Every structure is written in structure tokens, then in C-alpha cells.
Length: 329
Image (tube, rainbow, N blue to C red; front, side, top):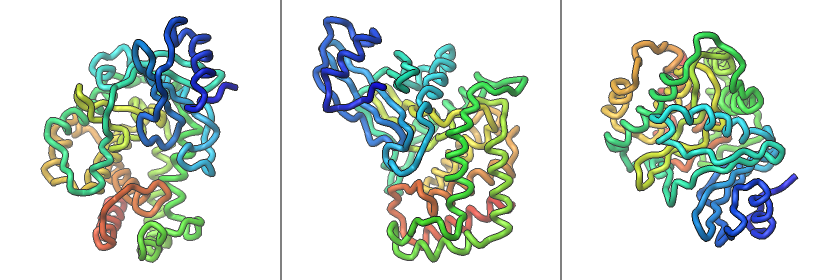
């Protein structure tokens, strides 16, 4: 199996030429990391003629090698890009797929250029602008409207990766003994988390929400629609990393989006604008939507997938209480 390695440009050039992803006369000028990825090994390949991205998934999470993950998950991401290529309104907000190498779990993507993601929002000072929010909501409306099924089937089921995500959203944060000391993140956070891990009523609702997440649905979802998946580029906002994609409930994508608006302390007018801009918002089930919002807030505050939040303990306490109320509504 070919392994991507930034320290072996000659071997990479040979590999890329064999796949016809690199012309015979094209040489690699430099290799670099395009950003701080969590799940996969990603390289920006700059050649004498252009630049593009290569991405490989392995049997573990790149940022947390101790966490096992489906090795072929990037191929699901590739299938997503193939799927959305026929919808210009969605494709123009995402990188174009350049190639898929199934045996080696590698895909090649258009390089969107030097860009920053929106994790800067976690300093809780930066506020989204209305035009930025319009683009972000417009993207979700686009994939949910353009790609919906009348008959539910197994296309893009993404079962293995969803099972992993299920554990991190709906199980891990609520275990009293999960081996993760939250005080290493912030002193006092472990004690703050304990009542939520002992809350029988809360955990019962969380179990129900988890079942809904794992169920099949009619709508194509991005599956991980948070600020780390949004890039600010010279051509506007672009959306990346749809590897958690599946056909499911629209409320999940919207729930994650709303949750991160609360986690980044966005204005109430921002929350309202999402409700106004999202197509067919009135069709959504408010109980399920609120449940997913609450689950995402809780897992980001007391789960393994921590954010670089510049937030005091009291604010986290208030957010956890708010999230619980949403789930139990």
C-alpha cells in the first residue's frame, strides 16, 4: 500500500504519475500541510504548473492515533464529491474532485488556495457577518434540497464512520468513567460534567437521539458542519471535509450549525437569520432539532472532541444547562 509522506517527494511524484494525476513533464516543487486536519493525512502538492490536494485516510484518526477509524473513509468523501458535482450551486462552494485511488484510500482535490478556517470563532469575539452566514446556510439548503430521496436506501450509508461518530456524540461524553480527565482541559470541568453523566432522564433522551442519528433518511447531509469545515477564501466561503456524510435527518446538520453558533457566542440575530434563510425551516421537527443542538453542545464541552474555546467555566456551566433543557424539551 502506498503511504503519503511529505518527506518523500520523489516517491510521491512516481505514484502520482502512475495514476496520471501528474503529467510526465510535471515536477513537484514543494509539499506542505494545507491546514490542521483532524481525521486524515493531507498534503498540498505544488508543481511547476499548479497545485492540488491529496488526502489519505488510515485506520486511525490522524490527530489522535490511539482512536481507531475506518481506513477507507476518504472513499466515502470521494463518493460525496462525485454526487454533488452535478449541482452547480453546491459544487461551486466545494473543491472539485480530481481523482480517487481506492486501493490506497487516497483522493485528489482542487486546491482552494491559501485559506483560513473559521475556528477563529472559538475565541468568542469574532462574529459572523450576514453575508458569511447567508453562504453557510445557503450551502445546507442546497445539498438538502438538491439531493433528497423519495425512497430511502443504502447509498452513502457510511455506517462505520457514523458508528464512531455516534460513540463520540451520544455515548462517550455521558460515561462516568471514560478515562478522560476534563480538568486537563480546564480546572473544574470534570466536576461540572459529573451531574450530566449521572442524569438518567438526560441519558435516556440522548439514547433516543443517537438512534435517530443512526437511522436512514431522505436528505444528503454534510455530517460535520462546524467551523473547522468552513474556509474563508478569496472566492468566498468554501466547505470541505464531508467524510461524515450520509442520507439522514436534516435536523442533524442544522443542529450542529446552531450548536456552534451558541458555542461561539454569536448574536441572537444570527440564530434568527439561520431560521429565516434556511429553505423549509418550518418543516423541521423542533424537538429533534433542539435535541441535536443540545447533544452537540454537550459533547463539545465534556467529550473528547474539544474545541479551542476561550471560555470561562461559568459560561460553560450555563451552556451545559441550556443544552440539557433543549434535549429535555
